[in-house]
Image (tube, rainbow, N blue to C red; front, top):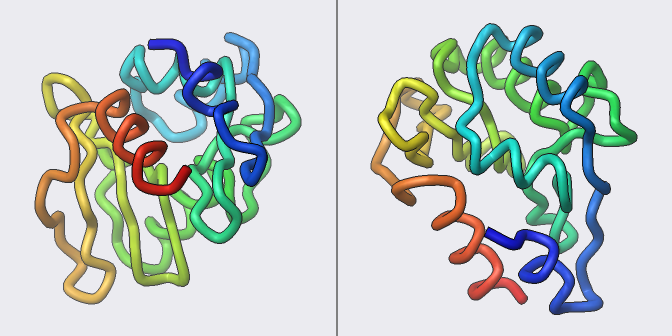
Length: 142
């Protein structure tokens, strides 16, 4: 999938920039999971970002250990600490401590699922994989 081509079709977006392989591997170590290859491709190209106030979590400044909002590491840690997010879920979209969409690293294709932060349980499947999620994100927001 050509993430850059899809990502750069609109000037109202911003992207964090790609992360290198070492930082993606570091993110996997920090979170104790293995990321699906299609999400790794995304992290290597646009790297995170999108439409303001609806950003996809990524790796900022090629530093997987940054733990603030908008980063995969920061959003996942926050949801684990505050909402008992299961260890096999990785946050890719986190908004207002209400909307939490994650990659299920235990599913065969890395399905994107909703996580109900109030009930503290996994909700419905949003997309069969991150590539499908990103295509939908782009078509709905850009």
